[in-house]
Image (cartoon, rainbow, N blue to C red; front, side, top):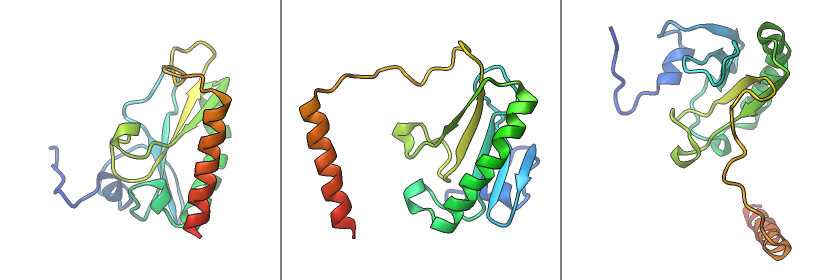
Length: 148
């Protein structure tokens, strides 16, 4: 039976508390990782890695959790590569609906890849002029100064 989530509940928070049957692959005090039920590509092992504490986007995430997330990803990659036979791995993280974030709980995708597997992240690219790049870089540096 499917349980519908209340507006203020988070599906991934429920997962970290063991409230759903899933295919978990790794867990520690900070991090929970499980197989994606809608994996990209044909290889086995597409894994989601998320903090046990709720943060909607990466910029809201505590540094201690970010460190543990990256260390867990680093540990998981060789195991996923070995199980899947992947030639490469994508580590992907989406922030906000426009970027493809479907669950409002920060998470990383570890996606095993093969050469010419048909998964595309390189579409709709553009070639900005050097002046635009220089102006954008300067604007970002200024925003960073204002954050201090």
